[in-house]
Length: 373
Ligand SMILES: NC(=O)c1ccc[n+]([C@@H]2O[C@H](COP(=O)([O-])OP(=O)(O)OC[C@H]3O[C@@H](n4cnc5c(N)ncnc54)[C@H](O)[C@@H]3O)[C@@H](O)[C@H]2O)c1
Image (tube, rainbow, N blue to C red; front, side, top):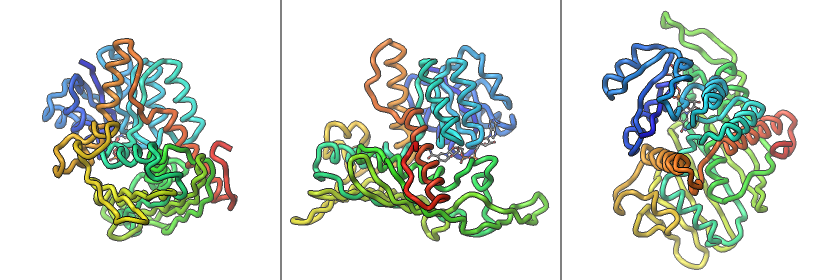
């Protein structure tokens, strides 16, 4: 058995917990959070032996092999650094850190300590997205001309909507680009198999003054320094051009991710509102919709389609596919074998932070910026 601990049991920490319970050969042995009481309830429900309100007490625990870091952004560096130094493998939440200085140091340290790393860039693990990447790699679309899309949400529409993601001390220097933008550009780069090299950005803090709820039911005004909207022009290494828009003030849109790829022969589109479908666009014959399917997908992607055709997989299953790849790699590593399954590792997490920084710089300086410039 491989023993895992989860740190931070908010929204995504509970997704990690529910998903880990499905992974064979893995046991959740500890939960760490800010307060013990809610963790004790969870631990009792799921039969987890250990809870702690101080994650540092897990550092020297020899029974723990893997850490799932699900804390807010400001703790990613501190927690990842501490556990990598202690020789633990890490599956971390995104963004990997608040600056490329932090994330570059983490990726390097993980390499030196020879620990396995991954970031929960889960959307690429939908079977239809995997199939999209296979189609591009097999040149079924021809040369890639254009990559376009958006990631839209509405949970920050009103000035009374509040979250730690709006405060720089927790979120870092970017809100919407680092939070959901990073998901979009990770996905776009994965599908087209090519990196974003240059960006030109227009960002906005639509509501610069918001109302933060107080304990007595009233609100306190506070200034917001981070963006809640962004549109970014892109250049890719393969010569493609692109553009994406992200917003958390798009009424009616909850988790609407859209990626469209146009090539010299045909096109494709994946949309998270219909995640089991892959739209295929043609000029000289009728368009098609491919439904996720172990029968209809190609050899390289069908292992992610776990259910018979017509039975839709979902968000938990995408996370499950990522975790399965991570733990299969860890089993290989523990047996001293070569790691054969690609993962969104800490170097990829570092790269997404470099893209976020280039986008912020481009907006400040009103010009194209090379990633890592
Ligand atoms: N991959 C994804 O699709 C995805 C989705 C949601 C969130 N996230 C990322 O996950 C992270 C957490 O987001 P969330 O939405 O779950 O936030 P959240 O606020 O719901 O949960 C964060 C949890 O961390 C706990 N915490 C705070 N300080 C801690 C400490 N010192 N030690 C241990 N626990 C501590 C909080 O008590 C809370 O339970 C963020 O970095 C976010 O970007 C990723």
